[in-house]
Length: 284
Image 1 (cartoon, rainbow, N blue to C red):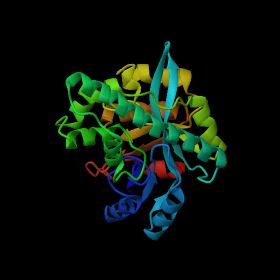
Image 2: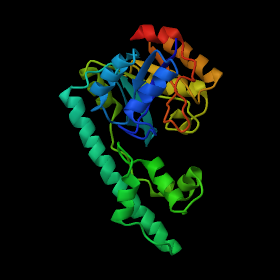
Image 3: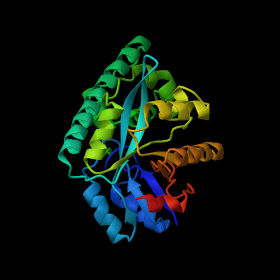
Image 4: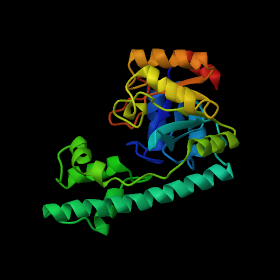
């Protein structure tokens, strides 16, 4: 049984394929159970349910939320996955609309910060037309990877990594400050479950920013998240065997849900390539 409960689309956020294209590819790859987990976006979940039925794929509603967690006097940014919620829940929909509006404002501020750097370097400045072009072909909300791609297109940098290293890290603007308590309440209030995403991701938003030690990571979860979350993403495209093993043990110890997925943005297409245990399907 193929399971992938972490997939992004261009319809909702920063994937390369539309919702329809994702389901066609999932069917082609014979994936049995999936979830679309776009960033702060659930308006297309009803359509996803219909597409899943049309392709005879089991489906569960999903969303990825960025959460701000206080830790040792600092604000720790982590991602959480919401599953099985009612996508028509008004409180959840209204909050996500607010968060998405903030993301649009944030994109404009990032461009303004880029222009400050360009002025120092004697480069031509980005205009509203540049921002419009960045947003072309982005069905969801403009994000840092989209801006990085535009910097490459304009020959400002050669790679995404260079874009982040040279500009986007210093030009970034804080995301919407969503506390874990509120995220948990929103998902639970909509009848869903919430799980910590990719806790040991070396290249993403994760506990690695605090410690690479797995025992240290699980201690943070134990002390600051238990009672607010329902599970942890144990299988991920950038999780090694030691990470998966440690988090399976942790979830079993505290009777938490175990989830997993590729975190596929279709760059390249990773859907269905992560070997998620079949028992995961039985938890939902």
